[in-house]
Amino acid sequence: MTTYTTLIILSGLVIFSYLFDLVASKTKLPSVLLLLLLGIGLRLLVDKLNVHPYNFMGILPALGTVGLILIVFEGSLELKYDRHKNKLIKGAFLSALIILFATVSIITFIIYQITGRELYVCFTNAIPFSVISSAIAIPSAAALTGKGKEFIIYESSFSDILGIILFNFAISNPNISISSFTGLAINTDLIIIF
Image 1 (cartoon, one colour):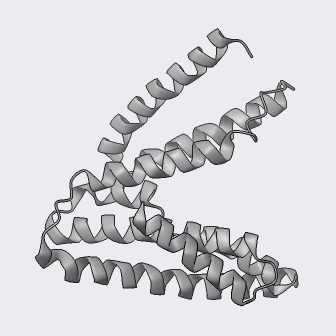
Image 2 (spheres, helix red, strand yellow; image 1 turned 90 degrees about the horizontal axis):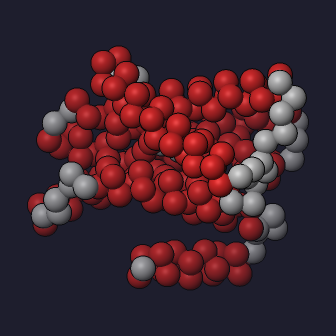
Image 3 (cartoon, one colour; image 1 turned 180 degrees about the vertical axis):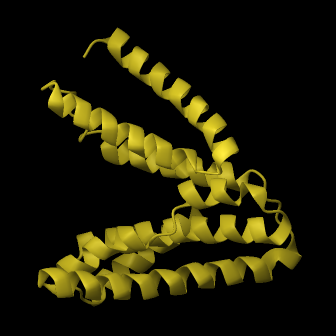
C-alpha cells in the first residue's frame, strides 16, 4: 500500500465520519454504529472482489488504545470537577462495576450453556460483550442535560476502563493465583498514578 493510498483512505474515513455525524444528529443513531457498518460492508466488498488488504493486526492494539483514550477524553471535555460531584462519581463507578460483573456472569453462563467450553474461555469471551461502550453511550447522551449526562459519561468511561483491566487480567492469567492479584494491584496503582 502506497503513501497516497493510505492518505486517501484516511481522508475518506474523516469525510465519512463527518457525514455520519451529520446523519447521527438527525437520526439519533450513534455515528460509531454507522462507521462499524461501513467497516463490515467494506470488508465484505474486499472479500467479494478478492482484494488483499493491508494486514493491520500489528498496529490494531495501539490504534484501539489510542481510539479509546480519545473517546474517553472527548466525553470528559464537558465535565467540570467539583467536590459536590464526588457522590455522582462514586455512584457511576459502583454502577459500572456492578453492571460489569453482573453482565459478565450472565453472559459467561449463556456462552457456557451454548458452547460447553471451559469456563475460562467463556469468561474471557463474555467481557467485551459486557462493557457499556463510551463510544456509543456518550454520543447517545448528548440530548441529556445536567447530572444525567454527567452520570452516563462517568459510568461509560469507568465501564471501558474496568472492562479493559478485567480483560487484560483474564488473558494474562489463565491460571489465577495470588501473584495474579498482586500484579493486578500493581498495574492498577500505576494506572491511577499516571
